Length: 206
Image (tube, rainbow, N blue to C red; front, side, top):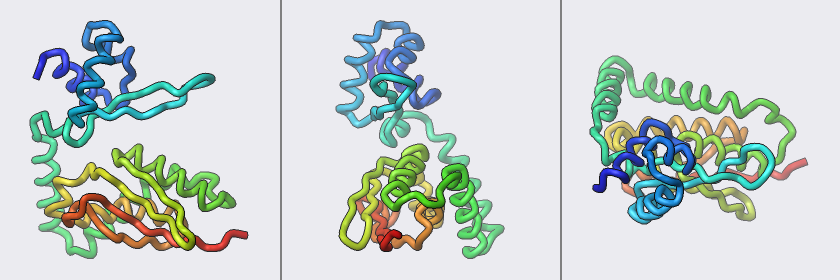
């Protein structure tokens, strides 16, 4: 890997959500060169871009590492997480472990629930997408006649979820709490599918 691109990746590892100007300052080259390297890194699925609004005017692009990009670096954080999960699993029953991740999911959902009453289901779906995106998932939603189909093409917990699929309870709880209705898991990346899929019933409003 070329040293400039490695510096860009290391900067994004430490500061996810960086702009081109942020990266130019950190790496020490001009924005045009940064943009060129980012295009190449996106093509390799190491970096992803998303829009962020910042006051009046057009949204700006911010950049973060993809799961593949994160895997370019030493996985001491992954080993630590694995050890924590091993320890929790040894000390807690499956029911207690599930309850723990339900609690974490509920805590993540809580800040998004302010002013939730009275908003439409479509608005709730947008809120769910925002929350999941902030947690590192790449998600999209499709509205069908009697349900929403929510799909995630990535999983930030993939490596841990292979051994402890109970971690998926976190996102399941988050979605259920924000939608205010039970959610069904149709497929899961941690169970061998190419994506996670949730179906959310659409109740008649008003």
